[in-house]
Amino acid sequence: MEYLPLIGFLVVFVLIFLLRMPIPTGMIAACMTYFILGAVQSGQPIGAALVGETGSLHLVAQKTIEQVFTNGTLIAVPLFIFAANIMNAGKITEYVFGVCKGIVGRFHGGLAHVNVLASLVFSGMTGSAVADASGLGKMEIDAMRQEGYDDGFSCAITAASATIGPIFPPSIPMVIYAMLTNASVGALFMAGMVPGVLLALALGIYVFLIARVRKYPRSEPPKLRAYLQYCLKAFWAMLTPVILLVGIYTGVMTPTEAGAIAGLYALIVAIFGYRVLSWDGFKQVLIDTVRSTGSVSIMVGAASAISFIFAKEQIGVMIGNWLLGITDNKYLFLLIVNIVILILGMFVDTSVIQLVMIPILWPVANALGVNIIHFGLIIVFNMMVGLSTPPFGMCLFITSGISGTPLKDVVKEIKWPVVVMLIVLGIITYIPEVVLFLPRMFHMM
Image (cartoon, rainbow, N blue to C red; front, side):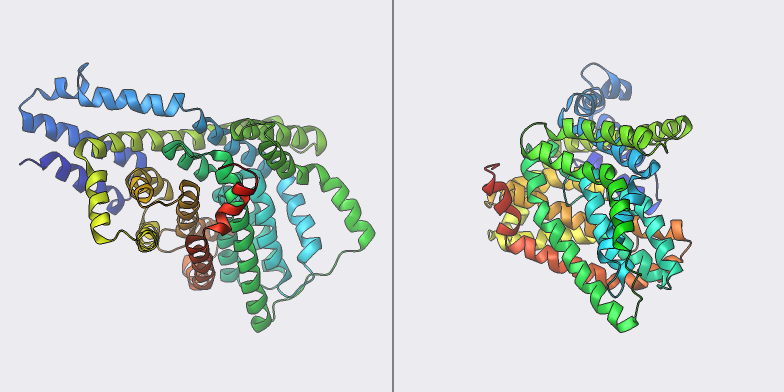
């Protein structure tokens, strides 16, 4: 059978998700299956075909190592992960929450508004939805529970607002997108600012409406003198996003350098400013960073092997020709892309979607005249919706787990925040200037 290796690869690839295997391990297993069946089909000795100097697996291993260890753009990822872990271990997240509570806590559904605003501020520090949901999330849900908010609603708005993290700069998924497409990281970061703020405003409108219907409480406004003193203490924590964004957009530092500066600055503030990070705490931060970085690196390496197979079998070309056969209208193409990514996001990890689908979809988008920055924001935003959609939305599991709320209660409440996110996705998809006018204004594209 001519297509036996490819059929074997696809069967194992599907089984990965059905059996809930660790995703990188399953991806590598699918690649191994492909090369083993290819060797059997060609009549070669399996060992020579796999691990010899001219063996396909040898070549894939070489390309994987090159992709993980020599890609300068990818270096930013562990740096932002380290910065996020430092912020969660220190009092930085606590100060972010406190400052935001003083600003919007006085409105109906005040703590839900705080939840959204704090996520927007925190997103300017870490670029990770998981860091937001797990760091700020525990604090936000506990505070909302104490003031009488429904647990399901508290978890749902926390999960939805956490997705602002990778949309507003800095953003780990945007760094990976830039690695895959050679797009400008700085332009992607600049392009994410308006969609991030737009999503925060849209979620704020949803919170306002539901808080009036359910009569969610306001928080007591702080006394001005005490609040100003608190803001003075929080100044060093709140300075983090300013340093990051000003440094990147003035050209003083690259996004990778900004990740290093953010981590170092957060470390200095946590140790010397707030004196809350012990040696044991710092060791745990390093362990968590290494673990997360290893997970991302293995995922990127495994996706590199899959990309090699897709290129060899010309799967991207076949899918591209198929899509172009359906339509040559870029707006209809973007609708198809959104539907495909949304469906995949319900079942597949966002990292897999990004690493596998972008090399297939971007050449088609480019052929249809879609701007590379605009396409990147559509993909990243769409993947963030996937973090909040059942049955396998990661943010749903995180908020359910840290609060002890049954997952079914979170899923029941998430539907309207997801609708809000889809409306914003439609806006940024079909009004490109919402995404592109800032990068153009600053001559970044």
